[in-house]
Length: 581
Image (cartoon, rainbow, N blue to C red; front, side, top):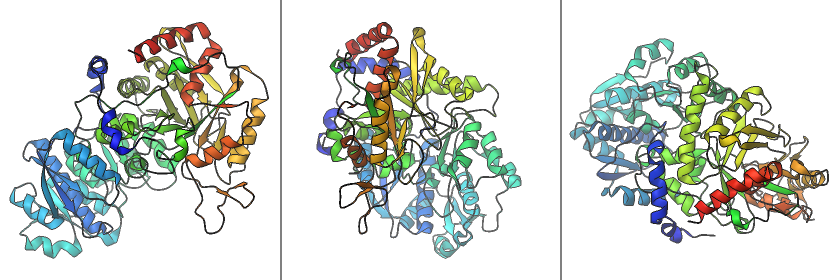
């Protein structure tokens, strides 16, 4: 596995790749994230108690107003909020090096309030009551962006007044309803929605920086807010209740959920990168034995669209990106690389530079939405989906990713197949696409949907055949032993396209081994169990020797060779020549 000491070696690219990047530079400037201007200085904010949401809200508001001042040209300093998550130290160092920003030191949050009050960046404070634990704090956050005030809880008001701050708005008794939104919306930027749990402070800085609407809850008002938002805008954060119930309305209004509720320091991490983009290692097509008739199977990790996971608990995790079996297993990982390319270039560079050997990367949708529901409530739905696919394509070309993944409401629906066709027409140089269904993930049962792409090429959309999912007693599902048995059984039932299948691996669920070495769904007493790549290794150990485990990229190329060898050989030859220049 690559060490983090070798990261910078991969960040240096040759002149040949620079020319390739220039050819894609124009379309790649498109982004659905509001842009953040670069600071000349960065000051670190240290919290006395990061778990105290009142202190976090205050720090987030200071950071947001500093970022807003950068965008308005009235300030030159950004605020980095210190966090105990070690990966953020990597991003901070990379950010400083990339932007050449000068460090202004470290200070506490109240000193920052005084600092920016004296500079005129903080105009006063917006009062809220954290004990209410409802949308009143989100109303306060909205007003903080509009009025340039810091967020102050009722328990902090005395201290705010001691600094000479004036109260700009009192949200303590506010009911954030349709009337309140109607009176406020004209002052807001509709290119961004932030969904923020009242009990958490994350992402309030980004909302304030861009004067975004902030809400929490799934109801008719949410629908009104989503309709008001510009299509193809990011939905930052995460909402309450069952997942489908709040992702579906975002999808229907043509918005892109980013699963980013615990992200930190988005305003600074969003500063765009104009240098050579990060690029993942893709499959060397010259190394494939195309005449090998063995049945092939791939394993793909779920939930890569989750930005907050990628930011805070993925890169160094021994369960996932840093798992010891990655060097021995052609593991495939879903990823949010397209959104990172727009919104967190330092995270993307470090992710790409630390890519383990033999792994492949799948872009998971360009965000979390259901393509069969996407923009179904908007006029010009097809045009929006095509525009979205073109932006995705520009970033796939930058990052070198050749597999695209969908999460569908119904992988077999005509609406889903229509989306497959649009993406097949717009995505260039991809091996193919994969699709899972929202519960069960393997609802497509391994079916292949062929979609016509550019130059008449047929692009496969291969649905998941099996799923590693603890304690789930449905066909094609379960622990590594059960899934291995399903894969072995399928391998003996015919050739052709049926030789190719893949398993979606539930990223969060844990398994254990009993005293006899058998995989169990519930970890033995005294053990937390194992998740991520290691259960995949356990599954591979139980596969028949005739089955070849390959990356999902190789799987899709082999599937295309099976269907149309002459056309696929031409594509492979062209890509191989380009890759080896």
